[in-house]
Picture 1 (cartoon, rainbow over the protein chains, first blue to last red):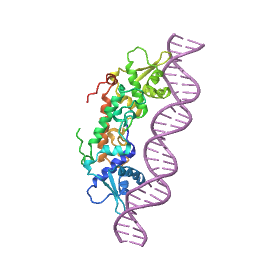
Picture 2: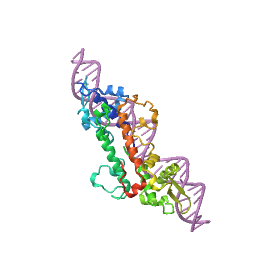
Picture 3: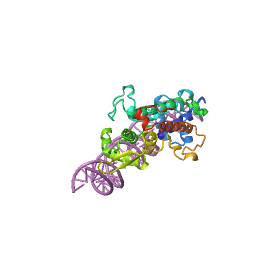
Picture 4: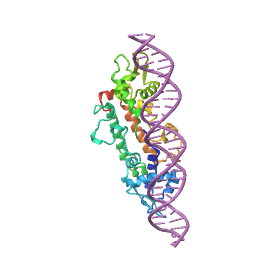
Length: 145
Length: 145
DNA sequence: CTAATACCTGACTAATTTGGTAGGGTATTT
DNA sequence: AAATACCCTACCAAATTAGTCAGGTATTAG
């Protein structure tokens, strides 16, 4: 039940961008890497994913860098984590076949007793991560349950 | 944010034991492995951990097998997951130094904005997994929030 | 125009984790 | 004494993780 460094770094970097949102000019990756103590080349990989997902956009050239695509209030931790870590689900057996509920490897169907727990857990995690925006984090607001 | 097969198998196997709790005789591992569709030798590794943790005990010999150490109402999903997957924490920076709050690798201290999110997430997951017992799962009860 | 800055990309890699197997042992009971 | 079933160590292949390397391309300050 652990995020990888990718997700952790990604969230930190996005907070960093949020703090400079509205400054006028983009934040260079090298600066984020330095201040957040993350390898520049590794962070580039992370930003590649974030950019492709549309959460941020880039400006090339001398005074280039990265900018949030939306205001901090409209980007949620869950969005970031999903982009960097894939779908949030405690076990594979309920990953992304959605309402189909294809019979999983365990051979049990709807009557799998463990399944209900994992569903509840998944929903709670998603609900929590989907309710905290970058804005909330900047203001240290506790998200409302 | 995913459990490994170890945790998933472990919970399934423990539910299996719960269903036979009070039967009088222990459930052989080979039967659980077969009915749950898990490799016997892999399940042995899992049961080794569960036994050492005290959640189950074993009976050797011909009609041997495994038995829950406590009634199903007193064993919680969180206990099982913690034994098999280690402490439940979304990121390492808040793993198990407890109240010490040693300054983590990111170099930031208390004022790390991401940290609060991870703490909340950790607490919610722990609370949920700590509130669902094997008994609840057998009865398909939804744990009370 | 050109040098510097900064993004962009693919390939590679060492270490760790994961999900097992193999092959034996040991205790107990029928 | 033979069968059952737990016990334990060691090994392994594949995947993942957390990066590094070595370049490329776009833009702009001067």
